[in-house]
Length: 259
Image (cartoon, rainbow, N blue to C red):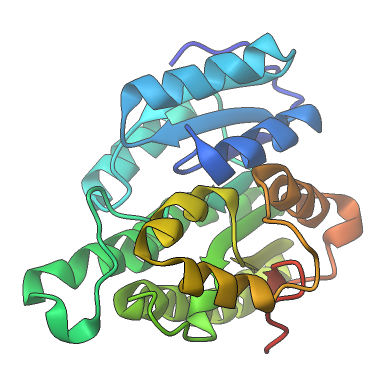
């Protein structure tokens, strides 16, 4: 994991940061001056993402590990501590298991249920469990959980039962964790995303009426981008965002304004 990291920089880990929304978040955090560790399940994606940040003038390194494996996470974060130091910012962005399919509940075999829970709930908890102690010790930290409107609302025809359940579960965990670490100067929040660029193809492959119904709910006449999410992350990680914690913020072009 080669770095060009200065000790004075904030260090951020972005899981699933090698492409799509995660890469947009990683680029934005790097632009704020943070050294960004780009995690991905696929090493080539992590390395390409980190290289694109460095090419843009930012500071980044790549680190491949599986967030669903507690042992992998602990080993990877120990390596980060040895080579770079304490992680200041964690963005739990990884959210779709490899090879996943969104199917109607009654059409899913039992073995298809667990991967969503493993990534979105246990994977995120693994990361927080490994990194929060260091943040507590230094008295500063930011954790941002990337979630989805599927955790708060159901969309007919999307087949998102387990995706939505896993997102709702981690949102609940975030609220409780925030109460524990807030006194130490750490904020823990969720960004619940609406219709994003990365979802256009799988949604279009299901049916145009489904895409039309999702579009109909958007106040803003466009799909969200990784840069939109990155901008929200940058604000939450700034000093200006320090009074916001334990919240689920809906970032969706106005499609859903629930609690």
